[in-house]
Length: 214
Ligand SMILES: N[C@@H](CCC(=O)N[C@@H](CS)C(=O)NCC(=O)O)C(=O)O
Image (tube, rainbow, N blue to C red; front, side, top):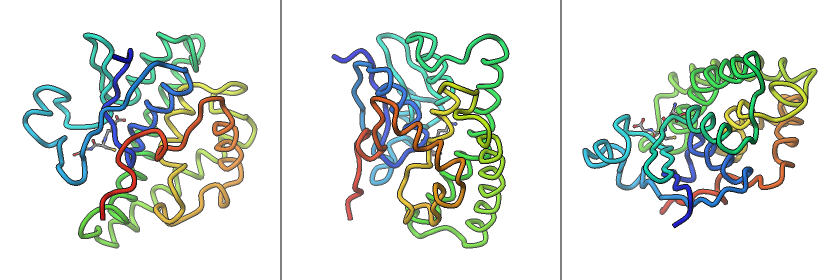
């Protein structure tokens, strides 16, 4: 049995944060498929009782330890591997600041926007999708400006803050409806730097469930 199990599915950018970290660490891990779309497994009483009371992926299991929330999982994996660690009190707080911003205002909105746009059946209300797109544009502007004069979120080296913020940004242009790397040049260059890290893989190559059954 591999050291880590990650409950996840390919379309989940929230799960991708943890899967990418495990791969970049060179960890011994295996994905456990959460059948989100056809079975809605995360909504079952069994999943909520046994796997995650919050009804969400990702969930990381290591022996008797079970962790949820990608920011918590990233923090745990950084502390235990010594990789992508934000150093010192200032570094830890700065990473946490960006992880919270991401969960609320970038990944949080982008995951919902993409779901309503191309994954929900029927698709979401265009007014809601447009509202979310405007919020995403604001957040991407903030991120692009931050990256204008530093290669990674905290400076010279990549940390868990970068691995959180990239969550939804490698998914195909057709799914997002815009080309983030082309439209925001600092974000585009940063995505290239993260992609160049040894062990990087695309979410659709790292987690099960792609493509979706027709
Ligand atoms: N803040 C959480 C978000 C997790 C989350 O919303 N995951 C989605 C899949 S991408 C989910 O399982 N949603 C189930 C639902 O909302 O019913 C994290 O970063 O782990």
